[in-house]
Image 1: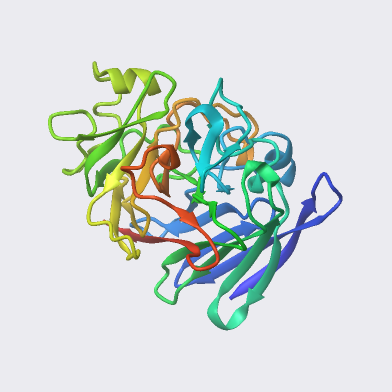
Image 2: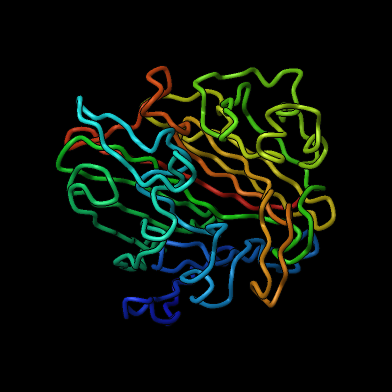
Length: 351
């Protein structure tokens, strides 16, 4: 079942809608400003519901603030691009240098997470279909492009996001979702006691500016080894140069068993010992960025909560950061004969 309600007016005067999708005891709220996940209500081991997604109560939080990109669809280029430039078919394309000499999330003020998407409801499939368009050269990349975000909840309660990009010429697309989770509840405080495992044997190494160097390092013997479940906070302050660079975990993990054609495979399993809530995430992308909210800090957030550092963690499926500048990485250039697609599935349960 999908319910549509008004959610305010964007700065350009466009009306924004909130879409509530319910199935099998799970309630997901999304909006078409930024194709953003607003909240997810799931039961704990005793059946008590809580919203496990960090965010704001009103549209103003997302339009005027939201430096943490709560719930946002990041596109066309997620994460960091070294030197804020890349080459496509011999032509150099320049992005906004918004983090020193580098680019982060395309444009934090004008990219697709700060725009109103067109939205249609497919009641038969409990799906909200959103689209956004960019002209050739807009936001620094080629192609007349259509970006697609589909949000659905299956009969078994699985929340699914499908991202796609269609372009009339070869371009670069690397979309992700930037939802922060706290399985104890969005306003429950630190998430560092939540127990996480990742199906990742390697992670992407960063330079001093948090840009991917091209090195993939084995997690064995490092704080980045989540192959066996452990609390998020166990190694977050370890004596490790990569931890020091990011002030915690803010790294892309290479999720095992990637196929270029894209197939869903397990990426993350998380449990909250206090509430008994469990989250499993499956992805098609080669990697996923684990961010432990190392710079989160917001007053008067959802339910008038105050969020502090580490109060939620983001898990952002993606092609590896800076991938167009590192030929050895899996690539996500796309075009008329090779559209881009990425699928993320979130499954909630209890211990």
